Image: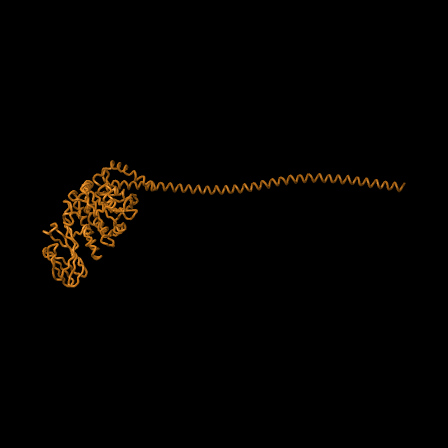
Length: 505
């Protein structure tokens, strides 16, 4: 059966080309797909996706992918984005694309919105979000501040005096230049303040604009409060012109990865809090990008698990990421823009496999068989220059899978009939063998009977001989006895005559 599927997948392109000619609209029996969201999430766990889907009461279909290339997930991300295979040790987190690669990316995906992909040049891509773009210019850097209780210090980065007031368990942090106060109602329960927006101007090396800030209380001792400022991304300056500023606290994974040497020194629970901020940032970016753009394809690069590992976080970041993405689609996007098809893609789970998980208007047959390279090529077929849209490939693959299953059922039925005939034949052979044994036994018995008959016949002949011979002997004996009797009588008689004659003479 595997060979049959392999042959069918080998001729897939020919069939799909014909399907493209015959199908001019992209409306499917499984649902009408208006746009696709591809979330490229290296190292995310399939169990985490399925667990969160079950908890949110949504249906997710999955397919397993046979790994047929390097163990580096970014190898397939580069291939997907630029349509060519890179060197095996490439890392999108560190890679600096050439001008030709940036142009190639733009040509391939001019029909898509690209989100948080470090390779993207916003000056070339008309629909993109790239928090890595001019990152240091667009961010307030993370920092730890030690402020005496009920006193103030000068915060050089923001060029402002920061004052801390603690009354019982209530904490107030004031940035005097910006006339903004961040508060905690109970410092023994809560550690992080509610985010507030500040309008930054005239700071050296920092772009003017709106930034949301938040503080996390690390500890209070010796009448000094130690505050963590996790860093913040400007609400604009990293998106295409058609995407509005993203209102809210933005601490993207790109910021965490860039300053990972700073974050790795924080306590584990604080690092967990930091990762939650990156996931919330991805939620905000995703909603804004889909709301403000009108493309048919969205590609998101989400290496949150990679970043978590860089921070030595061992808890289930992948479940939180899965939950955040599913919640966005279930709560907001399916109502604002119905007809979506979400794909979670992790090309490397272990040394043998990867997977893709699907949620949305289109359902996927779970027994489709692809290699990671084949599935990467299918996703690449959504690019602008592809002659065959990827969804047609998936749809026809599902139809091929249904046909394969039908053929498998037919073969299974034939196999059952053959097995039944084999059973009947075996039964017949057993009966024949029994008959042959009976025949052999009868033949042996018949031989015995024939031998007995021969002996009987011989005895019969012997009996006749004995009988006939006995009669002759009896007669002969009688004759001889009679002959001897007569001779005896004559001899006796002659002797008596002689005696009488002698007497009388």
